[in-house]
Image (cartoon, rainbow, N blue to C red; front, side, top):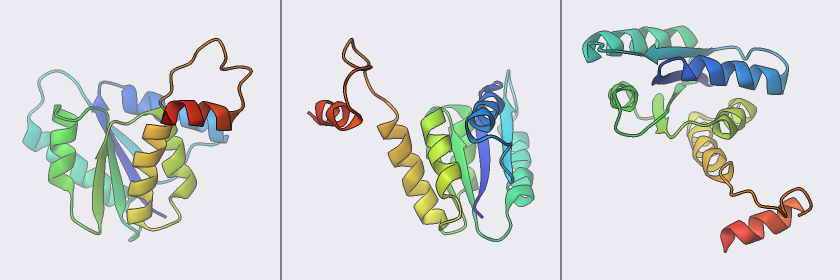
Length: 144
């Protein structure tokens, strides 16, 4: 099972884990969050991230998810990447996390792909037709 490390600004990572727990019914195994707040030494944070990766890794690899590209969490996440063993994706949102949790028994490569697709597909504009439109109609509208 692919391990998951979430590195975010503040307590966002833990909040998303709690939301995912609510959706799926139990706290997922091999998932850890690392909160970045205030002025933190990136080298200290990197050491903490590597230790957390070791904790959640059962040999299947680890997917590191981070909230915003270009911030300290994503910069640290990028430094943890070991191709084929530790992959990282920025832009974390709840649909992305749920998708990853659903498909984490597949390969690390597949989990990273599902993270990106889940994140993208989880973003939609809602309008007055939303409650009445079929999901396929909403996807058609979003596509264009």
